Image 1: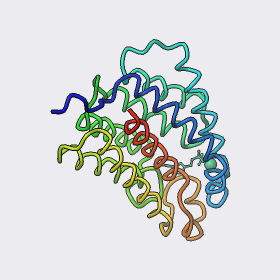
Image 2: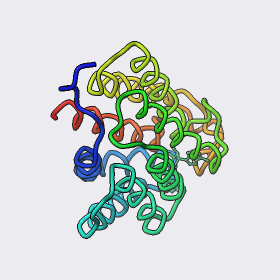
Image 3: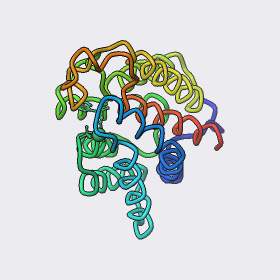
Image 4: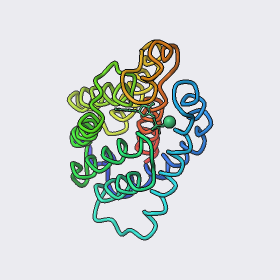
Length: 214
Ligand code: ADP
Ligand code: MG
């Protein structure tokens, strides 16, 4: 084991939330556009409100570990974001926080991300292929697990997960939505990238960025 390899610790968890908030601000209009095509156009503003509040909530917090940072983020998302994505991402971050040991290497992070995905699936009942958050999160967990099993470092594993999540988000374009508002459109939901899968890809890309910059 290379002891210079970065681990997912409290500072990295805080950096991740900051990086998500910045990415959501930058991509807000794109997320809104995607949600205007097959939903009600509020995904960008929902996440902006949620992650701005999550940042503010970290200000006064003296976290006991990376898990506490993510749990607080989840609680904040649940209380500040209406719509489907608030409770789904909120539960995911809470599950992630609860499952994360300190400090976490690639194997532990992969299992925590799997717990986050389970939380999304228990609440939202979406299957892979339903054109949701699950379609980006599922391949990201698979890539994290595969990289961790192969002995990858945290930055390598996170980069593989981000690539897989982005591919998963692109792969939602031809799908017909079977969950959430987009499902009301039936066949007309095809031909557009799912906003939630797109924001999930942002979560994994920022994770790769912050672990890689350590
Ligand atoms: P709302 O649909 O209430 O306006 P948002 O616009 O913030 O909420 O989020 C929409 C996204 O939520 C969708 O693009 C989809 O990815 C995700 N989503 C909706 N329902 C589910 C579900 N049951 N399971 C997983 N993800 C879902
Ligand atoms: Mg919406």
